[in-house]
Length: 221
Length: 323
Ligand SMILES: Nc1ncnc2c1ncn2[C@@H]1O[C@H](COP(=O)(O)OP(=O)(O)O)[C@@H](O)[C@H]1O
Ligand SMILES: [Mg+2]
Image 1 (cartoon, rainbow over the protein chains, first blue to last red):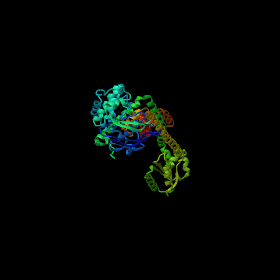
Image 2 (image 1 turned 60 degrees about the horizontal axis):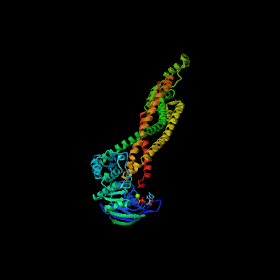
Image 3 (image 1 turned 90 degrees about the horizontal axis):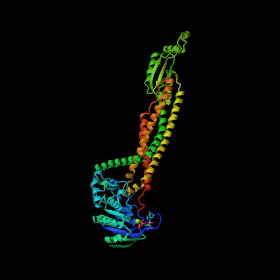
Image 4 (image 1 turned 180 degrees about the horizontal axis):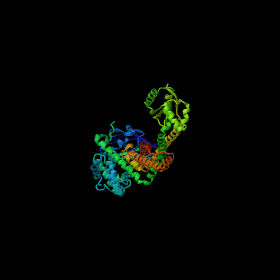
């Protein structure tokens, strides 16, 4: 589903964030990217979300060579990728409903289809009944679940999550990680960046360790 | 490589049309919300646009009115065509009706030598004294009233030249000097109105552009999120375009009202002055085309200003930064 081939990413300022990076992720697979701060985890995810472009190599996602995607096609591509962020990036003044509906509206979904799809996404993250609450009234854990519902609502093939538990206490964090495991079991290819090894270890998933932009380990559990 | 089509493009046309309408309604509502969310700032922008548009519009009304007023001077535009002596009356009348048939001539009136003498007697006050002349020294004449008004002296010049060229014509009298002066003053004002209009249209673009730029900056976070979720520039831009159009439309409305007010306020004194000169002239309200220009041009300028600004600003907001 996702394939990195000798990818290099060098930001205009500073050294290479990723060097000779190779990774192959199958459909419905869950991979954790771990490593110290500055290792290149976020960069790898941004490349998958086409938030950044590689300066070398090739990335293929769902049969699409990302280096060949033109600027005007970027939105259509992003609509197929669910994204979850550490600071969840919700519109805090808007309701849960408004936030989760956003990807569907952006993708041109008729209004009358929204209801059923929003229901399904909110059920999946256990937020049924919170539709009319404003995002800023929710707890941190709930906010992140809204973020995940928003990433899932349009039915993406790929979900990327960058430090999704960074702002949560350990219990809530584990809950969120379990949720992501369930998402992968439902057939979505999931890529999660997290520096918290202790949190990931009990999940028994594949772990890719990065350091200074290089892969230093690839193991399960 | 697999073709990138988003979900919307795979839908049937009818549904896409529905979505298009829904998205436009949402964008319009969004724009209204933003405008009403900052009523003072919005009102200020609208007022500045309105005043900027009022200046050239007022000049245009003045030009329109002076041109209208000039129509009241039609009699003064009459061209006197003196015919050669001894031309038979029947032939003179035929010539008069032939001239009346020209496209640039409104009417003609034939004045026979006898009638001419009669008229001369009356207004000269010489009366019977003229009898000593024995015969009638006056030639026949045709009084030609051109269709062209004072606003088009060149057309009258052409007519006069044509009339001079007729073989039966002895002399053509037309005092075009004042018409030309009057007309050139109107033309000058009209030109100033056009230039001012252009300059202030540019100013309106800048005003809308600046307002929208601040608006975009205030929604930077939201725009970044939308882009991450796959919103196209067109989608993100839409509410700002509605905002620009709304500013322009309201500004156009304000300027229309201001011009109407000026006409009402200035109409009284001008009417009284005209009455003192025995004229029934009344100041006319701005013409339909001018009002349409304001109400159509305002939104158009608003759209242009908003489009240019958002296109520039949105390029700067790329969602790569942060985590
Ligand atoms: N937008 C950017 N511009 C310049 N350098 C960046 C940018 N983003 C990340 N970097 C650099 O790239 C390297 C990897 O960063 P990042 O991918 O964020 O690592 P991680 O998420 O593992 O902490 C770091 O050295 C970081 O300073
Ligand atoms: Mg990071």
